[in-house]
Amino acid sequence: MDLMRYVLSIAVIIAHVDYLTGYSLYFPLSSFEAVGGFFAISGFLMYPNYVRHGDTLKYTRQRARRILPPYIFIVIACALGLSMTSNLPAFSYFQSEGVAAYLGANISFLNWLHPDLPGVFEGDSYVTQAVNGSLWTMKVEWCLYFSVPIFIWISSFFKRIPHHWMALLVILISIIYRQIFTYLYISTGNEIYDILRRQIFGQLAFFYAGMLIFFVKDFFIRNIWAILIVGILFKLLLPLASITLQIIIEPFAISAIILALSLLPYDIKRLRHRNNISYEMYLFHFPVIQLGIWFGICGFGKITFWAYVFIATSLLSLAVHLCNERWLSFNRH
Image 1 (spheres, rainbow, N blue to C red):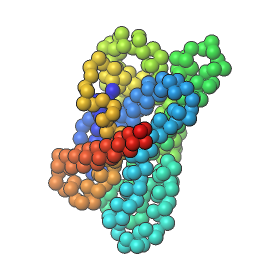
Image 2 (image 1 turned 45 degrees about the vertical axis):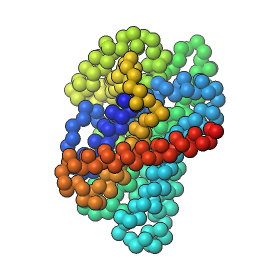
Image 3 (image 1 turned 135 degrees about the vertical axis):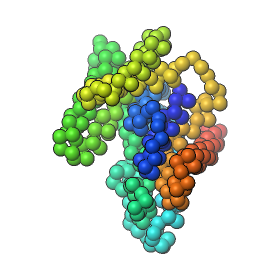
Image 4 (image 1 turned 90 degrees about the vertical axis):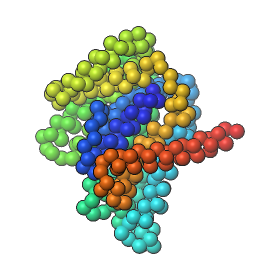
């Protein structure tokens, strides 16, 4: 599972390198599928995690200790450090309302309100002025986490209905939601519908597909190779299907593939969770790419630029991860 987190992070990084630079690096997973894979893993893990903690406060505290420090670090580090890339003088930059607006919007997970900093990443070299296009998923992640106690609370009123049927109902609602907003986007061309179809209700299908696999884990593991092969076949056939079928099949196919690979009976000790920096890599890579464009590194070719992004992101991620682990260890003692 830790290895799959790296695979999913690399899929998102490659997609963003392609988007921001115009390169074309092939990877078998799109960024949307990779994000869905992350949510499927979360769904598989968060239900038993919540049940184990027994209350919402402990559950929330445990998630916050892991998620918030790297997140807050990258938001503040960009606001401070990227002042050197702004076309505004340093004094004017820090006096600007845009810096405070960026900090307020991003720390509160409302990234879409103010994704850019004043004078930063402006010009024809940039596809977008956004500082970190990866952060939008974090509010979705938190909403998915908090959907677990709500799901359990609602399920308590329907005790005769097994949890796996309740999870299937949530997946169905999510699929219908995404179908509606996909239709609205295609028929009107209004980008707001494209944004809405990717938000919390559109991602519930992946999260609860992962939870569904947890509910049938014994069956899933007994038939893991068959499920993996079927999932890969459906994934390969997705481009040939209608948009409606794609929306129905995709959460099940991606979740089946990612969790089947995650649950294969092999242990890579060096990648165990305590040392896993895939989350930090996911958070940090976007501004690293933008900085590479600002420095002109993309002019040296896609292999050099990809090596720069991977090495710089990995080193920064490792440094922040180790600092966070040391801080957590200090507080535990």
